[in-house]
Length: 62
Image (cartoon, rainbow, N blue to C red; front, side):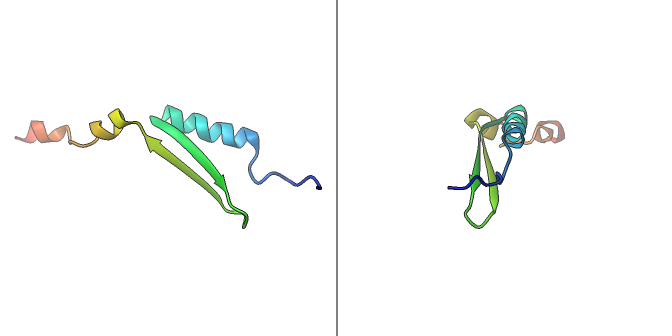
């Protein structure tokens, strides 16, 4: 099998994962599709997802 050019470089993938973790995401995933599409997906941790449920200004405006 001949060597091909990578669809996404390892350095770019590392930057994506590092940025996702620093932004508060618990996990990130990259999916490379056969047609050339690159799909990035990230998920919040349970505590971060629950903390966004209420607006902090709701208490101030009461």
